[in-house]
Image (tube, rainbow, N blue to C red):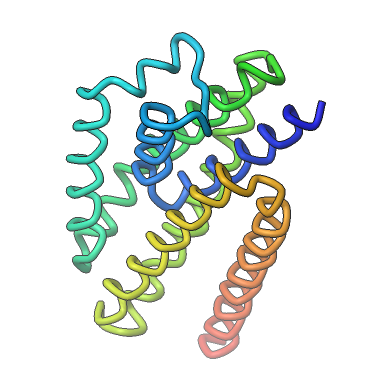
Length: 194
């Protein structure tokens, strides 16, 4: 029972991390499942531990890291990642809950898509505002912060899954603040235009 709850917390954390960067949590799970006993992946998810998959994830991570640091290219990358990040969240949620919770795959996929997709939409929506406000100068910094948050969330999700609950609450509050900020900015622009 407790193991199932911890796996569920881990799945929540990994899926939200995938909303920021699809490849960091995927690579984290793949490497930890291959080299440690912290994660046990059952079929078909054990395919993530293949050297080919690990190498592919590493190459995709390098491409993502470069693309996400360049103004305008990062916006195109976010459009492409609109499909990739929710899919990664779905895979991570299903893979980490299969063995202990035995959650129905459709429900697991749905949870992962919603979690990663929500984080991605907020991230992708905020990035053009950052680009416009700073003429793209802050993009590498913001991207690096997103990557660090994704990496920390991924490791915490696996090693200290009970802390994910606190982490997800903080992330939800951050998302709420960003949404509120965007609404306020939209209202200010409407007031100025009127």
